[in-house]
Length: 361
Image: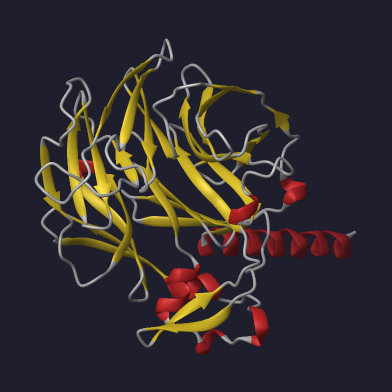
């Protein structure tokens, strides 16, 4: 009896130590078998003629905002009535002059009524638009602040500060002011390949910061309260949940734990991952909500995105990394936004006739 008690105590301590280590490392893993029973959603596709080649969608007040890709000159984004689905107007003038933009990759809300901020990565400019008036030009703009880091993706955080993912050093994330003053550096790219099997027999010490950071690039967005940010990996199955107040990062790997095949290439003497022609896109977008976030998963190559087989799925997590829901979509989707109050997922399709689509969940 005493021996059984000691043995059980040993197992308990072993379990607690393992659990503590997993929490202290801030790393979680999940696989396909860990996903909840899939819920199949049927989409209702809009027929808005003004939408040409959409890349993403955003919700603000009573508007659905559909952002176009670069090949669309003017009309960089469209405003659609959230309640009626009626097309209202478009914004954005192509160019590099005052109030103009060349491309918009992301639109964000800083909490100012009737206003949104758009980011143009080509000319590194933030532009503020009034979504209630008829002007197509931005009413305010500023250049992305000069820093010693190269930022690939940038999101707004509290007090109109910025948070971005870096590619030219070991630091993963930079929190900074609009003037470029550093508020915090978070994470280390080297941790992303620690104890991981690398393709082609590569060793961790062979890879420099530029390659690893590019390998783990993705989409980063903040929730409405600006308390959390979420980045999802484009080429690797990972999710970073960033608590901006606690300066803490929880990393989730899955549904695949493998790093897809790549070879080491070079650009201007810097290492770059070369994925070849058979690479797949992993997470395409993310929507950080109030208490949970929705990650849009693909797992297909770019040329197969519109293929009707194995269409996109959405994984819903809480901010502690627990998997809440697993949704299967019936349209090929490139970007999403979620109306949590009315339980509607909006997406933009990537098919022969791309447009807006809604899924009630």
